[in-house]
Image (cartoon, rainbow, N blue to C red):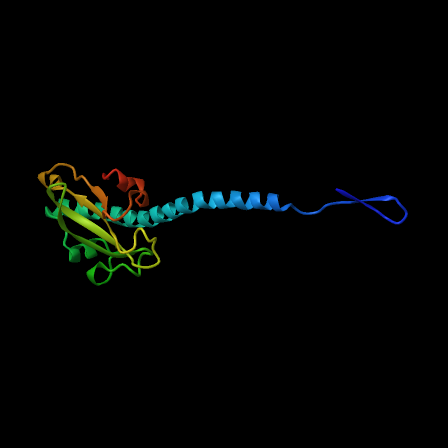
Length: 177
């Protein structure tokens, strides 16, 4: 508060309103520090949420594939997967109309963990997806151990270029049932 003296020599008190420059600078510094910490964490959260869509869609196909295997003694081809898992509706497994972040979902085989494996791979879209995932693949695989009558083991793996913090927990430890 400051005091003013008027012509009659009486003291008039004026009330100070607002914040000082220092107070405003402290608030701006605190907001800046919080945003530096929060934005990368939010970005990781968004990437994990988008990767979870791929994992859940791939995961839902596992039971259809296991049923096909138990009936036929082999894993399905891409065309057969379209029949048993109808979310794949257009050529080459293009899922653009069915999902928000996945471009294609393909089945195939690959050598994983030193074994011939059946794979289901989802490829993320090149746009409207977190930059950590754009155009990259995430894959469920079953090693040949499932072919010898033992229970089918499903593993999950992201492309090497996908940072571990962008994958959901179910895919970080590289195993899924």
